[in-house]
Image (cartoon, rainbow, N blue to C red):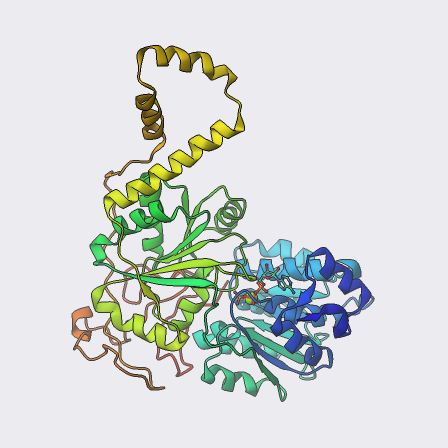
Length: 509
Ligand SMILES: Nc1ncnc2c1ncn2[C@@H]1O[C@H](COP(=O)(O)OP(=O)(O)OP(=O)(O)O)[C@@H](O)[C@H]1O
Ligand SMILES: [Mg+2]
């Protein structure tokens, strides 16, 4: 590991990094900062949670001239929450330089952004749709931009944002530095990226597997209708401190978060149909541990860095291996450990194998816990709580009562009753979880691969959908579902083949 002081970084930035608790550069930072500082274009790929933000953030901040009032850097990110997060990290890195930063994204009053833009920010972080909106309104002048960053480049490019990106690029000087980062970089995306980059330095941090080693990965085979009960039993056994449950569609997320709340879990949902205020408040509460379980569509799959996420559950297996990598990457960040469980229906096993082939990592089968195992998990928690209370030694007001009870009852019965009253016993309250259509039997990827279950004649079983069933992502209702696409959800319209570069999604507004 290299110390930041060996990387030719200014004193003010070094001070910021120290304040942030960054001592040594992570491999992607070590690998890219020197090229980026030298003005080279960089295509950077490294596993989730390994510090790609600072890898582009540090050289970007170094390059900003605090006396120049123009916008000097533009960072584009696929979702609003990620744009906000990236701007927060850049603010911290640039703190001592007093650099002015602004994030622009859909769902926020545009007038407010226009006023803020008049304040001469030097760095803009935004989502593609809103950036373009400002360009059209002539409220964003990008001709002074020297550095352009695409965070989660593949997500934005492979989902059809290429047109938006191209439109934005027309407003950014040709003479600029371009930096592209993601944990996944399918070859087709690399190719497209090369067209608007200038002899980029390709930095890929080598690892045996695409996913982080310190995430334990499991799968549970369950029928669609059993999934929810299996999930609650697993939650009762795992007792996650902070968990994210990913669902395939917005309706799924709404139903799941409601069902979990009914059964006594502190859960909230997040997806692209919610108001921006709601999205932000849910995320804030989750970060502050006021919510234990965040139920999300893929809107929360990319880039979000929430410390302390111990468990990720894929209630629905994702359609793309890349999505899997990013989803489970919300845990096990910055060297911490994490656990991921993916639910898979028997007929979706082919997808599981494709994920495993892509990540080069096998998932361990997890036997669904029984009711009684789940109960034991809850009883353990109750006992731990009880012991904690005893150890806190704050029982003076209760001892007299305890003695009164002991005069008439047996001590073991009393303790048993205390444990029982604190145990969350099996809850059969009815909940509504509509059945999701399973993913269609999947054809093999053109890149080759073995033993996939893509040939069991599945398509006609799925309403004759001709798009290969690739539903929309990031909160999208699956293609073919009745409800319209959300504006900001970035839904795919055509769900085209993954490597055709032809996918479309609606613009982030
Ligand atoms: N050099 C460092 N030392 C210590 N912590 C670091 C360092 N660099 C980054 N971090 C921390 O690691 C965490 C993950 O960083 P970051 O969000 O940049 O990861 P990423 O590679 O962009 O992940 P993803 O692929 O999910 O977007 C953050 O909490 C960040 O503050
Ligand atoms: Mg990132």
